[in-house]
Image 1 (cartoon, helix red, strand yellow):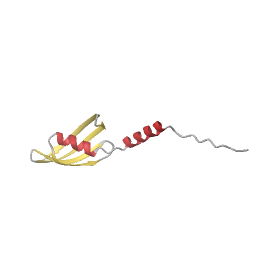
Image 2: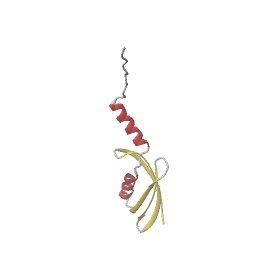
Image 3: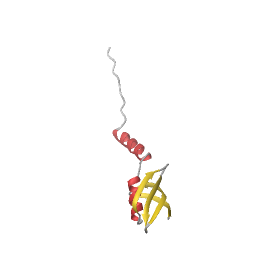
Image 4: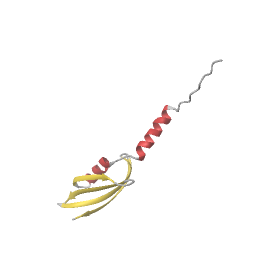
Length: 88
């Protein structure tokens, strides 16, 4: 008597959805944060990823050196951001 093994494969769409969710969970949006900061008139912007959805940055505005923190949630199509900056 021959035994047949049945192997259950998860659906492809389920795998793709899970992959997208995992990718977004740890998504580094430093480049997008930099674009938003530059749109606010800052130059020479350098962004580093902080904890959770926070990005630290340095740059210049109106001839002054600036340090800041941006909280950025969402993606390019649907996002919420808040920025705290100190310039000297």
